[in-house]
Length: 217
Image 1 (cartoon, one colour):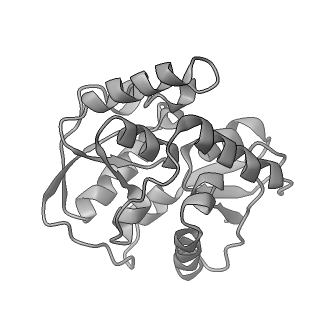
Image 2 (tube, one colour):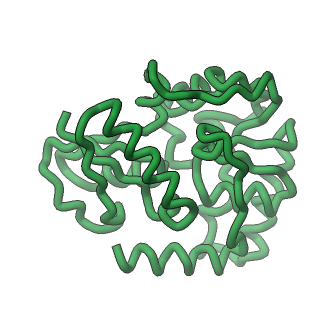
């Protein structure tokens, strides 16, 4: 497989050291794996037979849909089949899950994420609207409606979660669940046994931070 690993802008802002650890895992699991830091909103300038391994749901969709000859696979799918990754044990801890909007049509991603939670001994309590029917966390509305309306959607989606701890696999969803009063548990953090830091969560400030990184990459 001609492949590269794209950690995504949000993870590189959030915890670049986690991106480095994931790259190390891919190098040991798949062999030499170049890191691709060009944002998915810019031309990747990759060979047309390249598979982009991603952690960001938006990257998965954009690389796959916008650039001819580029295919994608989520890191979650690779990890779900790994026989070597040292999965931590959460001893049946109950969590809910919020599926990221860009994965709405991607059952492969939904299945892989849940397989990872099973491997980590996490008891999953699904919200009523989940997988392909998941409600947006609110962040995708940023720029289209007022910030207060964005936050209201975040609170509304959070209220749909049966558990206080909510698994997310998108960094922006961390912010949304926090604003909604839940405890976000980012999948990368769960895999490394780390707590999830909320960081800069005000929608305008977070999107400005993202845009600055996108412009540089």
